[in-house]
Image 1: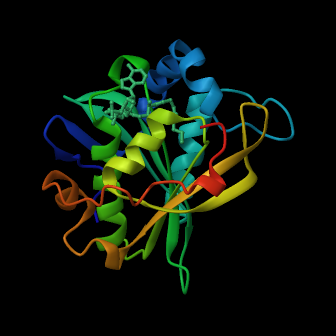
Image 2: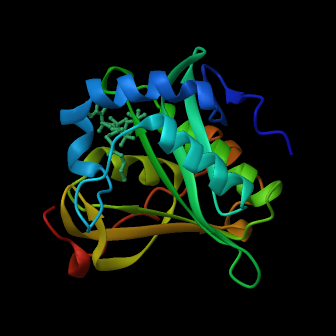
Length: 209
Ligand SMILES: CC(C)(COP(=O)(O)OP(=O)(O)OC[C@H]1O[C@@H](n2cnc3c(N)ncnc32)[C@H](O)[C@@H]1OP(=O)(O)O)[C@@H](O)C(=O)NCCC(=O)NCCS
């Protein structure tokens, strides 16, 4: 399984992050502070140092340990953002979670749904995982569109679930299992077969809508 070579569809590709991406990622993260802050994971123990050389090193160590797969998303060969597969559990669970961001100037081009579809297909086929989850704050309309487009299934409200932008925040959880997508997530989406309402949040769980 060589994830260093880009896997793509149209102008969008994903590949494993490299140590030498740290400088570009750091400058993108800094230039997009206001855009990313409301959705960014923070530490409940207080501010931590922000050095992407250390960040990328840690992500690659997690990859070597088999607990994560840190991708960058590229648009026409330019780094547009990150897609991180984290919390890989093996054995009877065989699951993982996906997180992502793009720089503001790349928003709205379908980069993230394409990258999530590519990454989910890699996880189901090459990594032999069974379930992929994405957790999203109820306020994050743009991110909710990503799971809606791909037909991820709504699975529930998780109260004060992840520490984001300085506090514990409620999240909606969405997931797919391998049997949901025998043809693959990308193929199902591009051929117009992603279910339209799988990600719909039932009224009882709707917060801040
Ligand atoms: C959420 C995010 C990753 C979506 O990525 P993307 O590559 O823009 O995805 P899409 O192109 O499919 O756009 C998704 C939605 O974003 C919204 N959008 C489009 N252009 C936008 C822009 N310039 N600014 C803000 N939102 C925009 C639209 O509602 C769009 O849905 P539509 O295609 O039905 O109109 C991106 O908005 C982002 O990085 N946001 C900040 C970080 C974040 O929220 N991460 C996810 C945490 S769960």
